[in-house]
Structure formats: C-alpha cells, structure tokens
Length: 241
Image: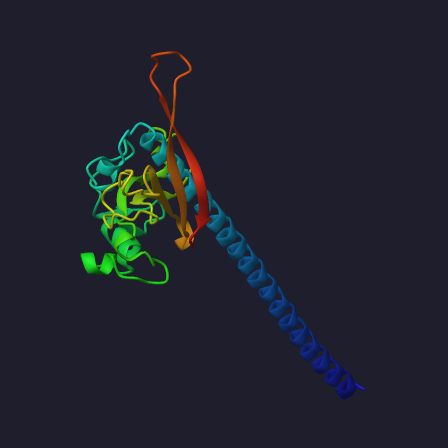
C-alpha cells in the first residue's frame, strides 16, 4: 500500500512538472505574440506618419515657392526656403538617435548612389528617370525637423523632412537647371512647372518619398491697373516609396 502511494505521488509530480512547463510555454508564446503585434502596429503607424510628414514637407516648400516669380534660381540652387536646417549638406541626428546624410540622400535621388553624381549619371536613361537630358536634377530646397516647420517646436513630430525641387521632365530644353521659356518658335510644355519631392525619415527606420508636380498660374487682377496674383496648382501627386 505504501509502495503504491509512492508511485502515485511520483506520477503526480511528473504531471505537475509537465503542466507547469506547458503553461510556461503558452505564456511565453502569448508574450511573444503580443510583443510582435505591438511592433507591427508601431511600424505600420510610423510608415503612415512618414507619408504624411513627406507630404507636409511639400506643403512647406510650396509656401515659399509661391513667392518666387521665376523658378530658375530655385532650380539652380541659388534660392532656398526659409525652412532650412543649416547648410544643405552633412549629417543630421534624428530624434531616435539615428543619423542621415543630406548629401547622400540628394545623390540617391539624382543618380541612385550615395557618392557624388556626374552629369552623365544624372542624365542617364533609367526606368525611374527615362527623360535623359531632361531628368530632374533634384536641388535641396527645404529641410529640417518637421517639429520646426512652422516655428520652433510648433508641431509634434519625430520626423526629419526634406523637400527637393526639380525641373518638370516634360521640358524640352535639355537643361534641368533652367525653367525653360516658351516662344512662338519653340513651345515648351514644362514652362512654369516644377516637381517637388518630399522625403521623411523617422523612428523605426521609417522612410517615405512623395512627389507632386506643381504649376504656377498668373491670375489677372479684377481691378484695372491692379497687380496680377500668383497661385500654385497641384497637377499630380504620387507616392514613390
């Protein structure tokens, strides 16, 4: 009787250990699943916020482009936005401690490599840039922490944004640094049109790029002798990545 009770107690201990192990395994799996779901949700949220941040960079650039009667100085890099975080080159530290390089980002946009782009590389015909000599030559126009886009710490955001301006590829003058003129003998469909490229970098490696094609319209004054006004119209918008 004593021996039988001892055997039953041994089996009970084994069952208890197996049950505990099973419960610990299930608990660990639930914790892992919960952590994974939280990370997925955070990445999804960061990706969506990055798209909105890149779009906001374009809107911020338009606020300054609206006051430029001639976009050639902008395309040539001689005029910059009032929203500029120092020199348009060098590294920047993001809110999460990671860094980006403004020059490398510009080169990637122009010739798909981090190093300096040659004129031949910028004009190379590729799937993404099939216009050859009329490929946009992206010029960094507006850049900085999105939190400071409207003034110091006026926006709650951890993203760093950049806005590039490039010549509309429908131009036919072969010079992406000039907003080509339209004449009776040489019509230019890209006159008064530029492309603004917004990029946003943020936490969890979030990175989005959007592009908008912008046309400048001159509106005659309703008053005789009054000054015409300038308005900008978004002709197209697309998410690049």
